[in-house]
Length: 238
Image (cartoon, one colour):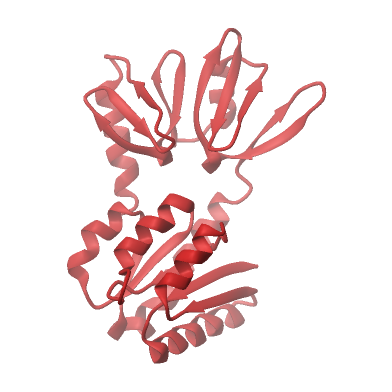
C-alpha cells in the first residue's frame, strides 16, 4: 500500500486533491492510504515521530511554516519520499529541486498534470523496488536497501557498508562488492572508498560531504569524474 500525505492550508483544495488521488488509485486497482494536514505544524510533528510517507504533496505558501521550510525538515527525517509541490508560485522551483522535489503542479493545472505525475512516480517505484544488497555471515543474514547505503570502505580484505544506523562487515573485497551492487549511483572516490551519489550533500575541491556529516577526499585523478557524476545524478531530479 502506498502511503501519501497532503499538506495544504486550503481545506477545499486539500479535499479536491485527496479525491483526485483516490480516483487515480481506484482506476489503477492500487491501494493507497492518504493523510491530510491543513496545519503544516501537525505534519512536522509526524516527521518528528518518524512517521514515513511514500509520496508527499505539499503547498508552498502556508502560514507559520511554509512548504520550503517544511520540505527541509522532511529531508532531514526522510530522504526517499517522493515530494511534489502543489503551488502557484513557480519562483520557488529552483529551491524546491535542491530539496529533491520530484515535480511541481500548478494548482490551476491539477486535472491535467496530477495523473501524469502519479504515473511517473509509480514507474519510478517499480524501477527501484527490491534493490537491496544481501549481507551474509556464519551467524547472520541481512539485507540492506541501496538507498540506505551512504558509503562503503575497505577494511583489510573485507568491506564495511555504512548506513545512517549501522555498519555491516562483508567478508569480500571492496571491488567484489562494487561489482555485485552493479548500480550507477555507487562511485569510487579513491581506492578504499565507494560513495552513494544519493547521499552527497556537496563537494568542495576534492572534499565530498555526505549526508551523515562524513567527509571523504576524492583521489586527485578521480575528482573531475566524480564532480561530473554528481552533476549528472542531480540533473535527474531537475
